[in-house]
Image 1: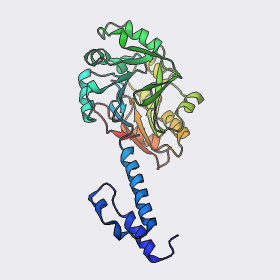
Image 2: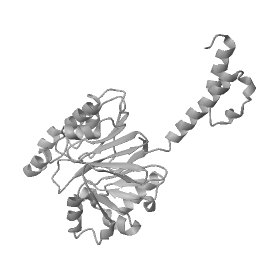
Image 3: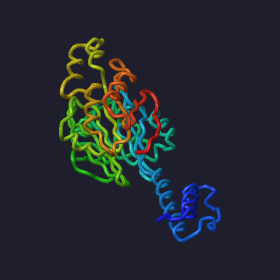
Image 4: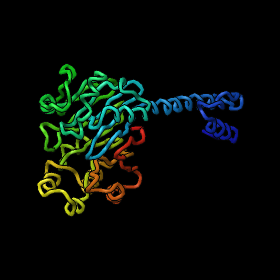
Length: 313
């Protein structure tokens, strides 16, 4: 198509124009010919698509660890939390880091009823009247707890594991996991062909979980403990057995194995979460996973006590 130097030069000139900057007002005469004008229009479309991509689903951790968990996912018009296991005050402070306010949250997705996942839902739901999405078993357990204060039962939105529903502009799908709770689930979020897969608080994974998480662009995966640290650590025997059991938590090696099974062309980034303060180190979890996962996949560890970066999904 580029049979003479003039056309080649024009192509280079157009390609170097930074769409969306002041340079877009450069004279079109500098790019001669109908093809160059067409190419210029094509670049505008592509550039607009890239700018719009930045407005799509984002993900960030507000707290992550055995002492409290709260995740954020959203876009320009939909904002949700996954779990609320820290105080309402800390959640609102974390949301500010993402330029979001408590009143913007349109729903809380709960994985299960353990305190490190629900501690803040009482105050949060009362203050902002936020709907709470969880399985029947989880909602039943929460309704019987006396330490959360009064929660308006009209805010309870029962969900069924495996059934997809819409929350704002995001598609939400829950799936069952193996944990010592009433009816625990984890979640997959979708928007415009992008997929965020999240899974924590499970003693093991199987093919059904791999199937739910496959083809994710972004994964948030539990790397709770190092087995040797747990075995040699101060926890009582019964608690060690619980953590290591089929309804406990994923160790670093199992997290690495799961991520390796899920590695695909679409997978771009992994955040490791729910690390034990006593039985793991961030650097150890990171090294264990990076040792198994190809370099093209970005891997990071979610901070425990503060919000992490807000990332594109």
